[in-house]
Image (tube, rainbow, N blue to C red; front, top):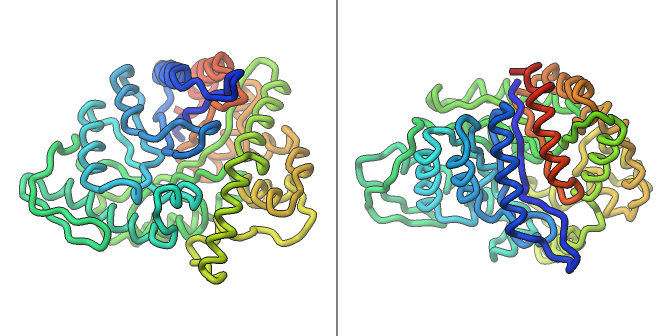
Length: 394
């Protein structure tokens, strides 16, 4: 099993309530360099917009180009490029350029975005699945048709006959899909793509989903060399000599990260309400995970929901039911012992990661940077992982 790192490009706000953008990028690059030295497999970066106190990661390929120039071995993963926001021609060119700069180290993850950020781009969320499908097909056509001219006549994008350069080193680049619901796992399998499971959940809950995914991707009709049947799961990680302190810090960080009372979560709830009203209550199946309650019982027990379903469901239910106290009572031991978080001493981190390995996960994406985790703590976690944790798996 591979151990990788994921970053949202986060940092605590300054005294004036704003994020120090320069420090965020400087510290994130330092963490990437150390992760390379420590033996992490890949560094993944998300794409986000309009989240000023949460993430300043609007362009994954730009950050990863800087990482590639400053590292030797670590792979660089877009986790993810939100395809509906971009012209597929530009995505194909920029990812190819990144693959060349990194000497063939790119992992290409894609997704279609959540309603809050999607509507900020003046895109109807109901169109994003079709836009993602079209964009992906266009990009793959660009990468497979060279040196001939390529053209595209689709519903959302058009390209007249042109020779598109540059072309990537890897043939093919390994493809991944961001997944937040069972429907997405099936979509990934049908397209021969690896799963980026960005909803932190207990490995025991994920295991049957992995089994279903593996059965489905076995029927992928495309070229065998293009099939990526890897499953990657995200978790939160803090490693230190003081196990209880590390677990307490990671518990606090994820409560803030998914916090039901965050301003943009409240704004997203209002947007959700308006969308459902505009659609006369008709919610497409592929959007229900974002726009409906996971649990109708109130009051909810956030710990039970988190360990049975995942953190996103627990946070969403707490927000919708007004049960913020239940969310705050999520305890560090429950989170770590179930494998939702990987925290504590190096040995405790190894034990938590073993749960992922035993349940069929191929790669774990550890988020060590957060607005509640100081930079020096993130660096210590990376260093301790390299010295005492990663050797157990590589």
